Length: 399
Image (cartoon, rainbow, N blue to C red; front, side, top):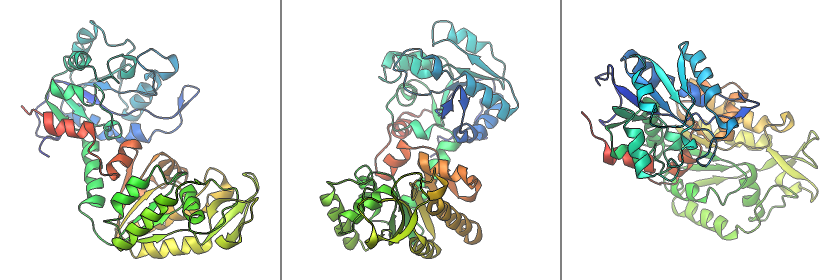
């Protein structure tokens, strides 16, 4: 891709509309997890260095075209300012006839963050007039929001039709990382996949089963897998009508010679508060629920990872938010991070809960790449073409 923001691009004094994803978790007006804010720093620093006028477009939540007090980007502008150790001007108004004159006033190398783009009615509907309106605020557009690129919104897809457009540093890094686990694979390659519902991730499994050597299924998805293959799972989180999906996975795994691994032993409890005990998967009582993986399963996962050159992880192994049931998830993080550091394997982790777990155990720098993208990450793994990426590839006009 030659349409990437880089050192050779002459943008001194130019207004750069930078679309980023600052949709971070907030509690009582404070940011509780700031990975997404930190990820955009390299692109902003490059733009500062090149003396551009930086206008940040972003969103938080789903205000549906109306001003919602608790969804202002103001606290995030303050956080970004502290991370950069540089003033971030904040424009508190919805985009209107005065916005352009306010943007024009900022100095070279300065940053202005506009208020939540989703406060504007035309954003989520990808209105062409609104797309034109925001394109007139800048000289060039840079998308550095991979995590939003599965949305056909005005500031993601529509804007690229009206202004020279580029990929940002982070979005390029994300695309390259995902390319290495889907089309430029270094085998053996292993997928560890969890989450509560196998039905929501069946497309990912079916897409990757053709390319991967091992798929390890954990969490609520494993419970469904176990139940439909003859094991009792008690009162665990489980989908009851997935017989055909499980059959499809098993038939596909045989066809493409992909090894499917499910837990052999688990940590069970009668409620979410008790400590829980380790049991063989064949010994679970009707009044017990599976809340983590057991020692034998962890050992099996370690063996598979140790024989892999590439590992993709999406979804925790259990109810890791409770310290009694965090060991499986913690051990997976430890095994992958050690293998990454010692043997330089290519390791990618993604998804909200996965990133939260990695942050909890302070291992963010121990993976080759961590995606904070959520829905876009999963849709890319399904093999879908993301509207934001397609738009950049089609509509880019380089001066």
